[in-house]
Image 1 (cartoon, rainbow, N blue to C red):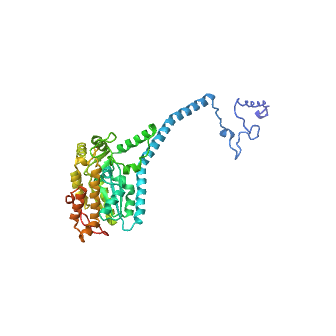
Image 2 (tube, rainbow, N blue to C red):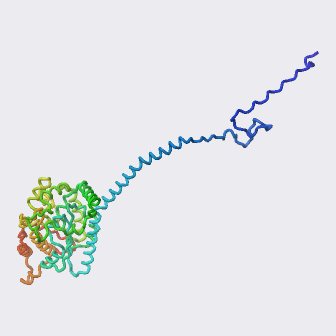
Length: 413
C-alpha cells in the first residue's frame, strides 16, 4: 500500500489564546475576523493612549510654599524699586517750581510792557550776589526815571549758587520778550554745580518735610526777594545776627556746591545765548559782581580762581563787561556774610541805572533841562556815580558793541 493510502493522524487544535494581561488596555477590534490587521484610516488606539499623573498632596503643599517664598523675596525688591522711582521723580521735579514761577514773571512783564508807551525792558540773570547788590523792581524803576528812563521794566531772576544751565528753560521766553538789554552775571559762565550738591539739597528738603513738617518746595518769592542783609534793623553793614551766615560758612557752602574754573564749558553756552540775542537785535552785557574781600579770599583758598582771571577771559569776547565799582568794595559796604549791605546796595543800584541809561543812549531829563544840550556820556556818568557814592565811571571798559536794529550806545562804563 502506498503511503498516500495510509490514514493520517488527526492534527492537534491550536492552543487557545492567552488572556490579556491585567491592566492592559482593551482593544476595540477584539473578536473581529480581521484581527491583527489595522483598519485603514483608523488610528491605533494604543499609540494615542496617555496616562495622566495625579499630583500628590505633598507636592501641592511644596508648590504653595515656593510661591510664598518667591513673593516674599520679590516684595522688598518691588518696594525698593518703587521708592527709588518716586525719589528720582521727586528729584527731577524739585527745581521745576523755579522755572515755572519765573516763566510766569516773564509773561507778566511782557503783558505790562505791551501796554506801556516807550517802555524799556531790562532782564538780569544771576546768583544771589545780584539780588544783594540791586534794589527791587519798583525801586529800580524809580532810579531809572531819575536817569531819563520814563518806564523801566527791570526783571531780575536770581538763584543761590546758580549756574548758567539753571536758566535754560526760560531763555527762549526771554528772547521772545524782546528786552532792550539782558544783563548776565559774569560768574555764571564759569560755574558748574556738583551733582551731589543738588542731591543733598533734595534729601534735606525731604527729611525736613517728613520729620519737621517743613515746606517741601522752596518759597520762590523768598528766593527772588529775600535779603541776606536786610534794609534797616540790626542787620546793617558789618552786622552779623545769629540767623545770618558768616563768611566762613558761605565759603564752605559755595565751594562744596560749585566748581568754578576759568575754562568751564558753561561760558561757551553763555556766549551761544548772547549770539542768539544779538541776532534778534537784543543787547547783552556781562556784569561783574564782587563780594567782600574777606569772602573772596576764603573762596580763593578753597580753589576758586581769581576774579581778575575771569575778567580777562570775558575781555576776549565781543561782549561788554560792566566792572564792579571799586569805590563800594569797602568792608563797611558789606554785611557780615559777605553780601552788599543797604548802603552798598543803593550805591550799586544807582550806578547800574545810570549805566543802563547810558548804554541805551538815554540822557537824564534834568541834565538836558539845565544845559539845553546833551551832556557827554563820560561827564554824565561821573556825575551820577558821584551822587551815588560810586566814582568809578571811568574805570570800566567802554566796549559796547552796536547790534543791528538798535541805537548805538553812547558809552560803556
